[in-house]
Length: 185
Image (cartoon, rainbow, N blue to C red; front, top):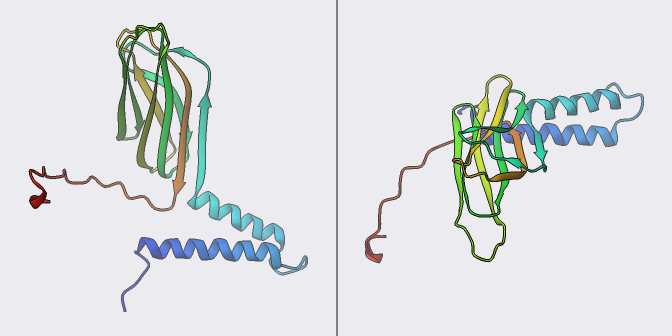
């Protein structure tokens, strides 16, 4: 019989079983049991510390987008595997042409907010949503970097969230081949 220890789903089952056992121990353990409530709570904290967690930062204040790519927000995280999300809103009384990059180690996601000048004298607004998966082998810093290309845009409502999980698959997909007709699909 083959070993199941290397299988990601097997590790997930072990984690869920351990968390369930800890939760059950919190509800069922008598006060003077060999494993006290404090011991079970400490075990539960260790499980969360080793396998999961959510780290987040926000800045709702409005400020100018830098001219030339520069960091507008950071989030420091401990080692682990993360699904990372960032969101920000770019505004300008005229038009918007802003680039932002979410950077985690050697992984990044780039987005552009482009809104042409409007004639109704309404403020131009655009929201950028970025995401990336990355494994930090030691503590690390996630950066949101932006550039308005000298356009004098403002940035506000910056949010960065990093969700740490015991496993992460960060794979590149092969490009899809073009379909010229329904018969080719």
